[in-house]
Structure formats: structure tokens, C-alpha cells
Image (tube, rainbow, N blue to C red; front, side, top):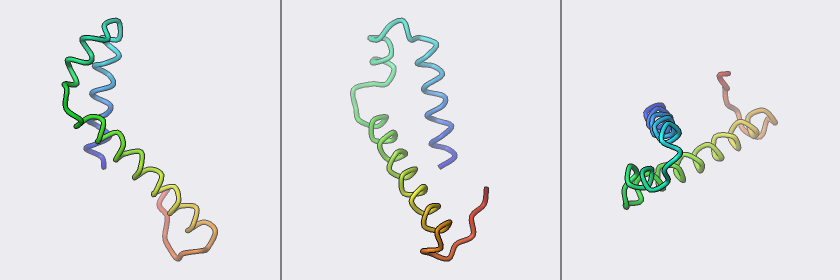
Length: 67
């Protein structure tokens, strides 16, 4: 997960640095779905993680949360 976060940050930083040229960003990301899938997977994992935290805080499950 940490690696994915670093990759997303790196890509976003580079995209922002080149934000004036949409075609350049598109070329940078390529025509495959790798970036799209990574963002979708990250969003799904984050949603699952937040649901887990809510369940632990409400007492529905027994879990130890780290800040």
C-alpha cells in the first residue's frame, strides 16, 4: 500500500508540473489501464479500510486500531 501511495504521489507531482498540456499528461500515462486500475484499487481499499475502522470503533468487531 505504501508503494502505491508513493507511486500515485510521484505521478500526480509530475502531472501537476506539466498540467498545462493535457496531451502530454495523456502520453505520460500511456494508453493502457494500469494507472486507472491502480487508482480504482486504491479507492476501493481505502473504502474497505474506513469501513473496518468504523466497525472496530463501534464494537461490531474486535480489533486494535493504530492511529
